[in-house]
Every structure is written in C-alpha cells, then in structure tokens.
Length: 117
Image (cartoon, rainbow, N blue to C red; front, side, top):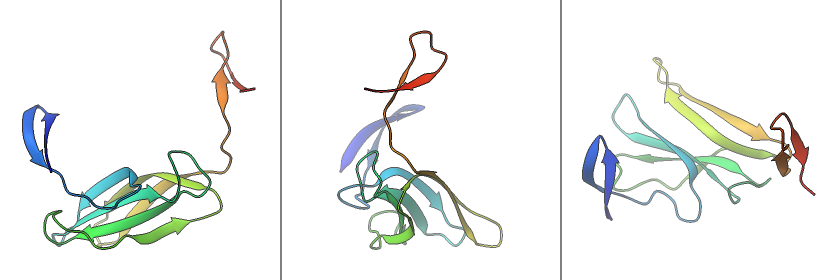
C-alpha cells in the first residue's frame, strides 16, 4: 500500500501489514545482524484486561513478516512497549502493566482525578 507521510517533508512511502486485527502501540527496531523486529500489543481493544505483547520479525526489509509470537501475557493489561537490542545482542523489552481499568475524570479545579459515575 502506498501512502503519503510527513517526515520533514511530504514523501510517498510503502506500508506493509505485520498483523491483522490489532497491533496497537507498535515499536520497530533494526537488529544488529540486519532483520527488522516489531513488538506490539494484541489480545484486546485499546484498553482491556486481555492485552498481551507479541513480536514479529522481517528478513526482507518489512515486505513479509513471521507469524507473531508471544512476548508476555498476564491477567492484567500489558501495554506500551519500549524495545531495543543491547550490545551483546539481547533484546530488551520494557512495558506497562495496567492492573485495573477504570474511568476517571479530572476535577473541575484540575487538581485531582475522581471516579466517573
């Protein structure tokens, strides 16, 4: 798929599908030996207790991807990954784990959050 994006200047870029039905908060890194790796959130909508993190890899510059495999899954909402490769080749993933999904509203004086009714 061709798209136009703004990265300093408007350019035409190609987009490739990594995973259908999800793929929230994707993070892409180029590994030291050449392939691309992407980590992303799957398993639930934008917010949900079934959220998990999965990873896929591409050896052809992103044109095709492996099937995603599980990185972490818990009874909570695993989300917002940060991802890199450190010098010894180890892949390092940091992420948030939201244990309670609850709607909150900012108070009128903007000093605290209160439960939504």
